[in-house]
Image 1 (tube, one colour):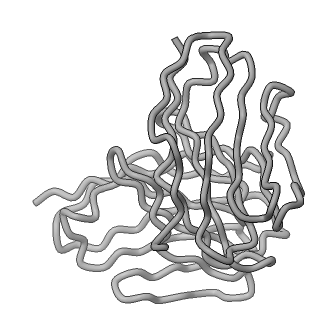
Image 2: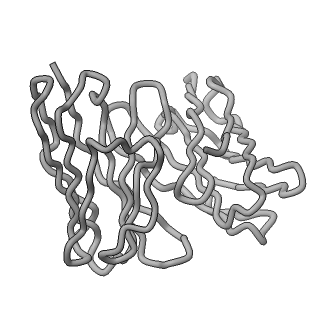
Length: 106
Length: 114
């Protein structure tokens, strides 16, 4: 399978911005996704970006895509305690990273 | 219909038994996906359907696993002769388009093999 890599942990203070990074390997990827998973819950689709785009903004979320470096990032502005969760990036619908656990400190 | 539903939500079985899970996708979603997720890991793709056709199967899907989507609506995933290593959360997802776009996950079925 393809490798999708994420850092395991991220801690930020409430009100700061969070940036979660992801690298992938399949240059033919069409869509790249960000999902949120809270403890004991299913995966919630946050946003996705088509591979011919560089950036997508949706309220507090900004996705940046660098196709040359195969790097995807998710920026959460004004991070809240309710944003504490595990965030997964995914390449198309098939390959998921191991997730980044975001902890928001009040 | 507000989302993808999966039944049962929890299943405990003894090693060697067969189990079957059901997934009901969002209405009119023509793509349906099955994944497996273990603790501390991201979802692992198992298989997917375009309507009733099973288009791809991961090499993770051993011969003991079979999935069907007979009428292009709900799908079942059967595991025969369960092993302790099959214990995991089994996730189903659906999407409305052929090329990708928004993919929505169900709550999952947690399987425990004793």
